[in-house]
Image (cartoon, rainbow, N blue to C red; front, side):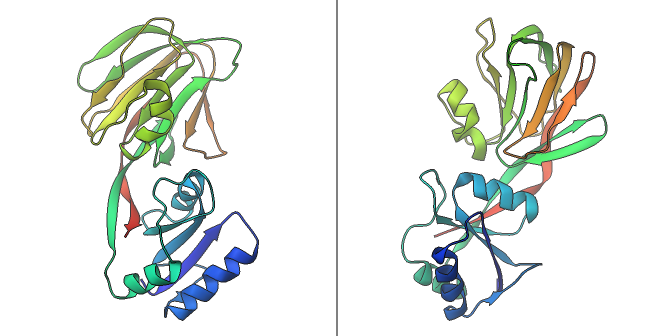
Length: 229
């Protein structure tokens, strides 16, 4: 991991501090093709960095109140540990959605939700494990990874999980418990009435599906890598 790129939404003195620490630790600052990405920010910064540099190990440095995977301690000492190969990289499954031939990948979750917040969606949900739910009326559905289960999924269900995929219905009119499925399960959401936005994490780009159209959600092939102390 000699080539390091610093990814941040901020432009302040902290950036220079990190640059100096990187150089003192014997790493080379890279503008492209990095072997490690230092994410300065919080959980949202990690998601953005993963979209820009998928699969490249990410070291998270806190610059936000919400950063569950941020490293603690001196950045200089952490980078020196990295040079000595005393850190490890943890792999996390990602999830993808395909809509009308277009694909988006998420580290946390794929969400399908009502485009017009004044009107509920009507949709069905079918899994490749032959489990289906009839017409659902609500704001939509969230399909999360274990990494993302502490985010949006947890906000809906007040629980998290460590393997597979989690399916949570968002504000449905009837009580339907969250479903935990095998990581190789395919989830198909079919819109029966209303328009829906299909979102991948905090990606500003969204897809739209209309009545009769489907969103197919499943585990992505690639993995995300987070550097752990």
